[in-house]
Every structure is written in structure tokens, then in C-alpha cells.
Image (cartoon, rainbow, N blue to C red; front, side):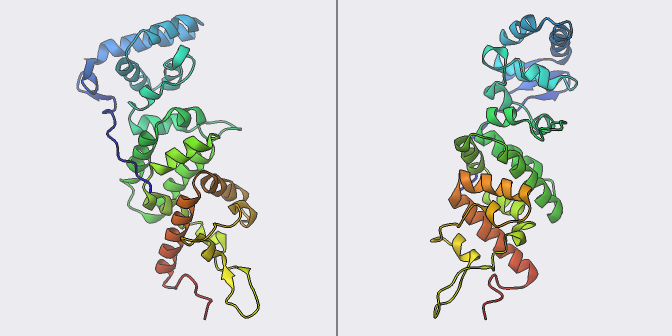
Length: 265
């Protein structure tokens, strides 16, 4: 479960005086000139002409134009999709992780993440982006924070099936990283079922291989924002949710030097 392995197209990059996208390449100055012309059309209110300009180009050239336009990447990317009014999944998959991360963050009172970008991102590209951002992070708490931020972004995707596919492409260890710092808030040692004469059933047991997983996390966690993210994970892929919860809890117990059921004589 997790970590779908599939070769992705080599992302666009600048190599010397050229922009390279896989086997395709073009002079950097020429690409910059063309990108500036399209941005100028947008600034002049000639949106339809800008769309035609972008739509006439190959997927590789579209990715190159977006890459070298830090001042207007989202504007150009929004011209790449069907009809020139959305994001092209093929172009999104050819953008480097640092560009995707910069486009994912939204400076808005109402939106935290660019959900349209997540909808256009293939599971394989999502999994690679998560891994790319976590690979250089050595500090455990920093890794947990970054991993949790990816789960927060995933939770905003309203398509449950796509959300499930995105999560399936992420290595299970990285999902455990995301849950490590908040797993204590699940109160997994709380007794949820008891019959006289039988050992009590604690919430942790609901997340065993044969457990049912219990109610949505938001019903037993005080922090509403955390509960919302966990609900999105639980709804999309219950088995992965249970697996990740178990792994994070066991790792947390090992780190604390306590058995997971420390209060069970």
C-alpha cells in the first residue's frame, strides 16, 4: 500500500542557455521572449489571443513557458488546459516540484491551497512532489510539519476517488511522519467498549488489522482542523488510515519508551 512507482516525464529545467523538457529543448532567450508576449496579451486584456497562443504549442513548450515566468506562472498555466481555461494535467506533470509547491500555496482569506492544481496533478506526480520536499529535511519535527502540510492540502480535494489515488502514491512512512506529532490527540488508550468480565477494548484496537476503524476522527478529537484532515484521510482510504495510525502510534510509543497499551497492566 502506498508509493506507486511509475516513471514520470523529466520535469522542465533550465540548462545553461536552453530550456529542456525531456527530449525537447529551446533557447532560453526565445522562450522568455514568447512568455513575455503572452503575458503582455493578458495584461492588455487580450485573453482569447493569449489562449490561442498557448494552445498552439506542444505540452513541452507550455511547461517551458510556465517554468521561466516566475511573475506569472499561474496565469500562464491556467491557459494550458482544455479550452485554455484550466490546467493541463500533462503540463502540471512536467513542472518541477519547486514550481508546484509555489503554485500550491494560495494567499487568500478563504483558500489555503490551490485545489485546482491538486485536481490536475497525477497521483505519481503528487507522490514524487511529497517525497521531493521531504527528502532534504533531516530534522524530525520539520519533516512531520511538512508531511502534515501535504495532508492538509490533500484534505481540500473534494473528489474522494482522486484523493484516494493521491494518497496511494505516497509512501506510508511519510504519512506516518505526518501523523506522528498529532497521534496523541486521538487518545488511543481510551476505553471505547467494555463488557463485565471481559478485557476493555481501547480505541487503538479499532485500528488493528481486523478492527473497524471506529467513527470518523472528528467525532473524538477536539481540534476541529486536525479532525477535518483526518476525516479526509479516513474517508478516502480507511485501510491506509488504520495502517498509518498504527505505525505512527507504535513509533510514538517507541520514542517515549512505553508500550502502546501502557495502561493495561
